[in-house]
Length: 587
Image 1: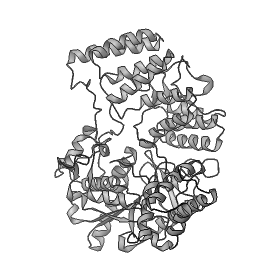
Image 2: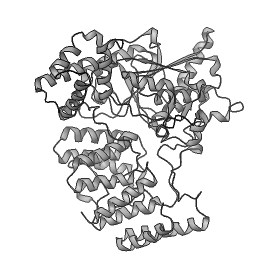
Image 3: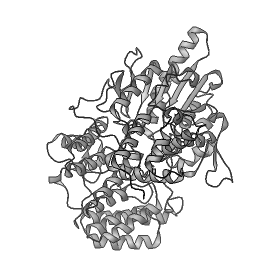
Image 4: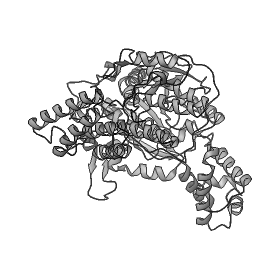
């Protein structure tokens, strides 16, 4: 590896922040230096000083892809930007958009058009569109909400700083991984499967794809509002998982420009808790059960049904350190964990989900949605092919061979009895009996996810961590989107002293489910143990906001009858952060 002078590396990091707003944290300097070393060699420069002098000799060329410097700068951006995405990411936010925000916007736009005798229009901006899954998801929702789409002027704009990601987005072709939270029936409805290419076989319906246009855009630069790109008088902006990588001043500048890009009733949707402790004076926040959404502060539009005007007041603290995009976490699905104060932690692992032989609905499953009348959708003429990708009737089922579609009723009944007996024995801490019972079940149904999941907990409670890890891995082979194995793996990592891995596993849960409040609590406890009180408090506040939007009587742990309200009370108590009930006798 090429050795870099610290001051020169700092100058490079400063230029990155200046040009993109992205903050490279101190702990990521070594990784960033390694990536720079790769670029120095690829550009055939003698050292970083030579590379730095050449690259920044003419800063204006950095933004011109036709120049050598612009091409090289894009390669650096590709190294530091995140392109991970998938369709209908964050079910709660898409439900909010589909059930409330967009129907309200559509009704207002239709009314204005009728009054003025003009064609109704709809303008949406996906400000960090990456490889296109987000704006195309929006296009599918709009397609379903507007049976008279041909009568509308609809424009959805996707922008990103990473031009390679945009090139991929324009192709509108995707691999199976982009649909990991989408029912295959929905994928089959809107995408055509092709034999070639093998790695990206799914092609979006061109009627939907043409609703979206893609442009390169650097959010940190004052290049919007921009009428040429249709970035003016917008109804909705999605800018999710961007602000966590930026410094405070850049965030303030972006929010100011976005407010001016929206129309008077326009909305801004960010990832959960991204704008905590940021200057959002240009917006008024509405706290809905699914998410916080921001609207221009001078809006005269009525509030979203069920929303309060702002999140609960929180103690003022300094803004958290921006997250570096260099070391992204791998995506996983989420589940519910059980938090307990440290002094009241139970002495054994508990199953992290109700265990049964047939899989529970996937994390992205939602109840069937009832269209508000403002959507102007006529059920008599509605096209069944335009059913929502969020409807429970088409929700993704976990693909496990032991599903009832793969077993006879007699086999399913026997497996249910085996699991029920094993759970009772587990609750009585008869872990050897649990192991014997589930070994027998797996001998008949080796792909039984719940059996592998409970076996991992039983072995962990006996202190047999290698076996516990094995069955965690086995469970994930059966269902790659399951979460409970990762919670156990995080505790095992913490027990072995590998706190960094434990945090990574918990962050993976939050990556796919920003509403996983209890994963935030787990992280809060880890940060608190490290003495990082600022991050710990930020995690606790985020968990508090997410839980406050849920019914206080909602049961999080059917085994112990732990409710949302009791968790909120624990959060309010001074002392250590609440922890999960996944604690073992063997620890």
